[in-house]
Structures are given as C-alpha cells and as structure tokens.
Length: 415
Image 1 (cartoon, helix red, strand yellow):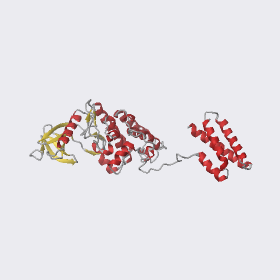
Image 2: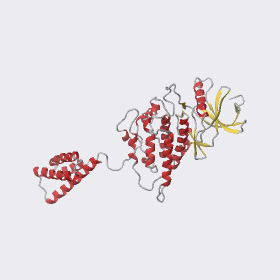
Image 3: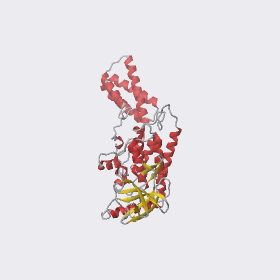
C-alpha cells in the first residue's frame, strides 16, 4: 500500500471485507468514476520468494476474467500495482459466499440448490465458450447476491485454452472439489469444472460432502475411486432426476460427464420446472414428491467406473452408513427351498431338483408351461426313487411349491 494507508493507487480504501491465506479484499471507491469496488491484494511480503508466483496468478485472473461479461461472473474493472503491492479492482457485491450459507444452514432447499447450480453452470458455460476454465469451483468462490443471484469469483488459477504447454501443477484447486483428472495430474478442461460443480450441488442438497475422508490422501483416493450414495438416499426431498444429474456430473471419466456446462444448466432448469409442476401432498415440504419415487440407489451404478480403471464393487461403498431396505441382492429362492427341504427330510432328493432347475433356466426361450411341467414331473420321479412317502396333501403342497419356484427362477433369468 502507498504511504497513504487509506489509498491504493487511485482507489480510496473504505473498509476491509475479508482476509484469506493468500490475500485481503477491501471495499474501496474509485473517485474518477464515483464507483464502489472490491480491491483484491496479496497478503505476503514483497520480499517473499512466492510473491512473484502470487503476482502472476493475480494478473492471470485479470487476463482471464477481464474479457468476460456475464451476469453470473464477477466483473473485473482494473489491475495494477501500488508500490510493490499488486491489486485487482472488481465489482463490489452486497452478499455472502455460498460456503457461509452451507455452513450456517447445512442442506439447502432442493429448489434453491437447483437455482444456484443452474446459474453457476450458465456462468461456466459462457466462460468455457470464451476459452476460460476456472479449475477451482467451490462454495467459497461462489457469491450469493441478494439471496438469489449467484456469481462466480476468483479465477486466480484459471487457464486460458491455448495450444501450447499442457503441463502444470497437478494439485491446483481445493482438494475436496478437485476432479479425478486434477488429482492424477491430467490436464483439466471444462469438464473438470462440471465435476467440481457436481460436488457443490451434492453438498447443497445433502448438507454433506461426497468425498469426506479424514485426511488429504483419503479425500484424493475417494475422488478417484469412491462412488458416493445418490443424494436422495440422504435427502428425501431430492428427486430421482436430480440423482441422475449428479451421477453424470460426478462421473469418474470426463467423457461420461455432461459434454458442456450449458447442457448441465439445461438439465438443472428442467429438473427445477418438474419440481414446480409436481403435485404435492398436504403438508409436503418443497422439493419432496408426494408420491413414492424411484429408489435413489438405482442411479448409483452410473458412477461405478473409477478413473482411469474400473474398480468392481465401488458402488457397494457407503461411508455414510445408509441402510439398504428390501431383499438382499444375494437372495436366492432355490437356496431358500433347499433349506426348506433340509428341514423336511428330503435334502438328499433335492439335488435332483436343483439340477432340473438349472435345465429349466437353460431352456428359458421355450414355452414356460412345458418347462414347468417337466420340472414338476422330474421332481416327483426323484422323490419316488428316493423312497420318500408322502400323503396326497403333502404331494400337492410340494408340487405347488416346486412350480412356483420354477416360475420365479424363469422370471429372474428372463429379467
């Protein structure tokens, strides 16, 4: 800052708005235009060896955002130096960071989360069209103005799309919101921003992070490998369509995500309109369908491919301990019948029954009634050869049970 502690360049300092690890933001006035601005500076000594890097990032932000003009992106007015201190003059916003809202309220109403995410996606779509990728989308870099308007801030590590160097520090960005390709040191493009926005959307809807490891290594491992539970399994107000949107945004490989941020924005808006059009039960909370909806876990397998290799069983992981209701996946009606046979004293004869069921499954394309009749006849033959003597009532019960099990087995195979 200049010798006048209340000035920075031509800007007159009014108040300090906030201070972070890298810089300080002031409220200031531009006397030439009589305009209130936000001044962003670097909070390190001019002699600090990292000053040159931070200064380069500040000017990179000015270069990246200076040409962008969109209602969902913070406008940059000016960049300069006051003595040895570089600064960035930006649009002054009356609002708060999205991070403040999520910390204060936890999960936000689904409609509100969809509105905010759609606005951010619109801003990203515009920036991507201009060849600018943010690479650090997170709640702290999203400003909420007047409670409803979302604006993307801090393009400090943005990258301009150029045909030149493709290398760069792989760890840029905030760990919890990094994409798998960023974690693995791959080049991050516009689809990396889509992944990061997917994480932000997940947090807004559920009040928890999809990747919440105990330390940095655990978080990075989860980003590359973990399949998080669908939002509706945590937040009952989340519709199944939102589960599908989040699943695609958080796909491990960029090719499986939305092709553009505009496509994501359109899906979010349509999801929002469907919520508005949904009939509500008396007393139903906003965003919560009145009717039973699709099981959210059905969408989770869409996220099952890890980056860069598939890891079978990732969809089984659930660090939140959400209970799964209904029949277990390994339920087997034949196994249940075997246990029944064991208790009724015909276990030895049941081996033939199992073999006959396998034959019935192989003949799944044949007439079901013919197969079932054959199975029943074979079971009767095996029981007679084994010397099992039942009265007619027992035979009728067992025959009906076998026919039912055969029908269930054929249905499972066909499905």
